[in-house]
Amino acid sequence: MVISHQHSFLTVPSFSSCFSSQKTYILSHLHFPSFSSSFRVSLSNLDHPEPEPIYASVKSFAPATVANLGPGFDFLGCAVDGIGDYVTLKLDPNVHPGDISISDISGSGNSSKKLSKNPLLNCAGIAAISVMNMLNVKSVGLSLSLEKGLPLGSGLGSSAASAAAAAVAVNELFGGRLGSSDLVLAGLESEAKVSGYHADNIAPAIMGGFVLVRSYDPLEFVRLKFPSDKNLCFVLVNPEFEAPTKKMRACLPDEITMKDHIWNSSQAGALVAAVLQGDLVGLGKALSSDKIVEPRRAPLIPGMDGVKKAALEAGAFGCTISGAGPTAVAVTDDEIKGREIGEKMVEAFLKHGNLKASAMVQKLDRVGARLVSSTSR
Image 1 (cartoon, rainbow, N blue to C red):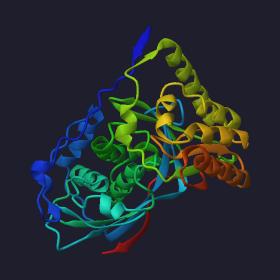
Image 2 (image 1 turned 90 degrees about the vertical axis):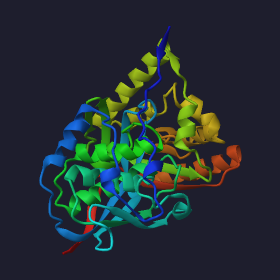
Image 3 (image 1 turned 45 degrees about the vertical axis):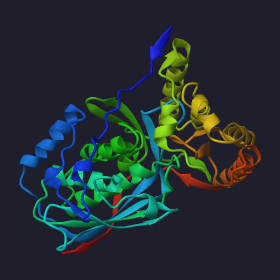
């Protein structure tokens, strides 16, 4: 017996007809599809009066995320402290009212060369435009600069971090009128353009902590409260290898057996229970137990099986692929132990995959995307 595993992913339509050689783009010519009934309700904000900007400029930050967490493909994710993307947004009289311009892209790796400054083709731009539409912004022009703290194609929610930071920046510039659900919807438009309609990166990037995506239509989330007195450390090991999300999704099976469905469902349930109870051993065990997605993706990441084995032998509670990869994530309860585990994982990437890698140990980000500075008008 088999169960269909194929999703019908909605994607943002081609914007080639809207493209021009100028640096600004007319928002009134941009129409996004309605992904869910919740999204259609959010767009009712277009009937509301346009808000006044309360700042001249703002700077926002959005954290990295670990999606899937093993058996939670497309419905579980968490935010990771200390690394992420920054967006600086300002009122710009040189930008036509109602338009947005991306003035600069800098940061990790070759982001500035690979990412488009066309806001219709950039994750930060798409999310910013969506929030401007929700708020009915027409009378001022905005310019945006993006500072990438996350490498592209790393499996750490790079596109979601850019989208989350941009969505929060626009919202805060105009007084923070939108709630987290609206901001997640704005970020989902970016994710749909890049890699598919899934919220397990963008939801925790916006909301922080662990997030369960309960439903996509209508869009519903459950914030999973990890006990504050528990010390959870993520060992993130990123090899010099790019795993494009679209390619890593293309390798997944269209159908799975009932046996694997039951197993993964039970492990996802165990993972949620472990998060709520602060059971790090149980969390790690469930994290390591995916029988559907990880077995298809691991062979595409050189040395991944050896890296996972090295992490567990070094004392990690669990290890899996972060998001679509190639970053490997292990969990432990001690930062010093985490660094030791990271060293063994780096060695394993070189030994088994002939890949250089870097390791870091980070904690859970409980806040999510936020304003970090502002300038008064």
